[in-house]
Every structure is written in structure tokens, then in C-alpha cells.
Image (cartoon, rainbow, N blue to C red):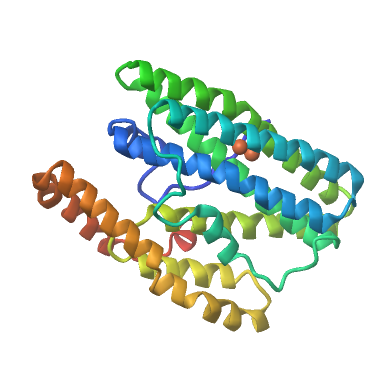
Length: 296
Ligand SMILES: [Fe+2]
Ligand SMILES: [Fe+2]
């Protein structure tokens, strides 16, 4: 099945361009690998909580989810082995986590997972994150293939190549379940398509929050929040926005990521900080529109 990938970051950088830069700097590549490792590990916790909430029903779904948890645990173990053998840290990433940001952006007023709408929401959100995994791994693999060969890069590529087909299978699995529900009636199809759109937006906003540390990121986060709120019933919009405003405008994770990035560039090359990093950082101010609105 063809996998439709999520949009570009900040409407300018494609995943392949990001990864070409990532594989050039070992330190940055290690940070990416550790965040993949952490997300794989965390998804086991999320899927296990989902199975407990479903409490055995529907039986077929719970059985398939138990295999899904085992896949994600295997991916986490492969990435942990890789980083361990590279002599690198396997601790929690210092900057915020993508899954925490996703959970913050989900509207908690949603339906119970045992209801049909709740199930559609869960499947649509899993589907959006699995697509992101496929996008990241395939862009990373392509960038490694194009980079100068090294024994370490070869090991990284082989690990990612073991994971990618399983992530693609997770996307197909979610799409099959959503397709099955959509085929029940025209009204079901409308509900499934609306959920797919909404969770693709939420996923994109969460992913971008982790990648966009440039000047003006707070305003782009706020714009994305408004776009997501517009998918909710009118009476739910104010409280959705109010609850998430502090995280958008005053995010400690964002400030921490900025400081870490400045420190890293300063340690590596003080000239690059002035000549390259600061001008790029300030360019963020030229692009203050929410990316979700722009991509429509
Ligand atoms: Fe995975
Ligand atoms: Fe997966």
C-alpha cells in the first residue's frame, strides 16, 4: 500500500533535506537515534494503556495490538543496542518528547475508546504517527545512502532498514481498520475522513513543535492550535485553546531545546554560530503563519 507522507516542516524543509544535514553531524544523528529509541519505547506504554482501556473488546483489535506492542518493543531494543554499541547515551532525551506533545494536543473531551467514535479517533491518531515514523526512517535511510560510507553509518542504516517495513505494515494495518469502519455507511465514511484530517493536523503540529526552535516558533504553535481548535465543535474551542496556550507561548521544552542548540553550535564552531546559526534562527520571523493553515 502506498503511504501518504505528512507535510514539510515550516513549509520549507522537506524530511530528506533535514536528514541530509542530520547524517553529516554525528552528534545530531545520535540525538535523532535516541529520540527514535525513546518514541519506540514510549509507544509500548501508550499501546498497553490502550489495550487496558479496550479491556478485551473488540477481541480481534486487542489481539492485533498485542503484536503491535511486541513490534515496537523490538524496535526500541534494536535502537538501544545500536546506541549502546556506539558508546552513546541511552537516557531520556533532554528536550521534550514528541509523544508528550501529541498527548497535550489531543482533546480530552473525546469519546470513550470503547465507543465507535473513540475507536475511530484512536486508529486515526495511531495511523498519523506511524506515517511519521515511515517518513523519518525512509528519509534517514536515503540520506545515509547518499552520505560518504562509514562502518558506523552502515550499521545505523541496517538497523533503520529492519524497522521501516514493520512501520509500513503498521500504517497499512491502521488504514485497513479505518477503511473497514468507513465502508459501513456514507455517514461512517464522513466521520472517518474527518478524524483522519484532524489527527493528521494534530500529529503535524506535535512533530513541528519538536523540530521548530526558530524565532517565532511560539506564534506558529499558537496558529496551529487555532487551526486544530477549528476542527472541534464551537463550544469546545475556547477551553481547548485556553488549556494549551501556556504550552504554546511559554514552553519550557522549546526554550531548553534552543539553549541546547546554541550551546552545541558554540562548542563546535563559534564562527558558525554568528555566520550561520543566528541568521537562520532569525529567518523564522519571516514565516509566522501557522503551517497547518498554509498547507491547506
Ligand atoms: Fe516502531
Ligand atoms: Fe509502528
